[in-house]
Image (cartoon, rainbow, N blue to C red; front, side, top):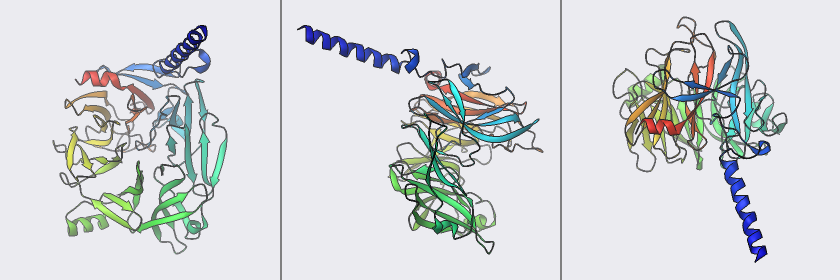
Length: 419
């Protein structure tokens, strides 16, 4: 009987310890701080909406701290690591090169990974990232040991023999086993011609699997999260002559394409016949995009269900530029340029509750980071996206004095505000 009680006590103690770790109340050695409790953040309250966010503190106040591109989640699922971009100095006074950084909320330290030009793939469940360099190949960094760069493979001869590679991928995505990376690469041939290729690179062997090639600039490629044989790519310059000719002959603006090995299919944006910044749902069953143009009611966040083909409005935020849906697809975040867009224009970020059709501004309109006649060089769009299974929203907040802050915003308050 004593042994039973003893085992029961051990079990109760273990459960209590696990619960404490989950709630952030364990001992100092094992506590992962949250943005609300970490010394790496400071509380910010929007003066108009009242939404509370937490701004990352690193470097001097004038320096720039930016979230990753919205297709790439900036924070790991366990909440320990936040990956961000950093530039010393600001745009009005001059700034240095942009580095990829990792904030460790267990050690409460920030580690500089150096000047990585590609937006990396973040493995949010296993806490590591994969990235490539056009001359050096592909690498992995485990966030727990960020100073150790592990070489995965070289750029294969099947690609380097074609010419000088200019870009490997707009932002990396990988197959579900994390062995292959989808590339939407561009290269210049010895004859001076630009080629745009799509396919999978096995980063464990360096083997290249070509999927196709386009005459037009094909970028923003991203594998479907649950189907390794399906990707989505963008005709980035569809407003130029070749794109206008395509629209004149077909009637459709040719932005979004479903890409498989050996084939590609246009996704027409039916309501507005215009689309930008498309992104997969986390469950891979659909995708969303922003259908902006003139500032009218139809300029919203739209969604496509892959199985049924149904397109519908998912967030009525006129002028939305980038959007991301929560893992359960109940909520949408998007950024909006309330006036004219340019690099460094005025921005604000909205949270839309699909169940109530109400919204709140995560942060209200900010004055322009840079004037239109001298735009930003740092791609300062807010790029809001959900992290930690929908617990927080990460976004970039521009400031009129020439620098950017990274905001992490708890979602519970946003749901409460939009009931």
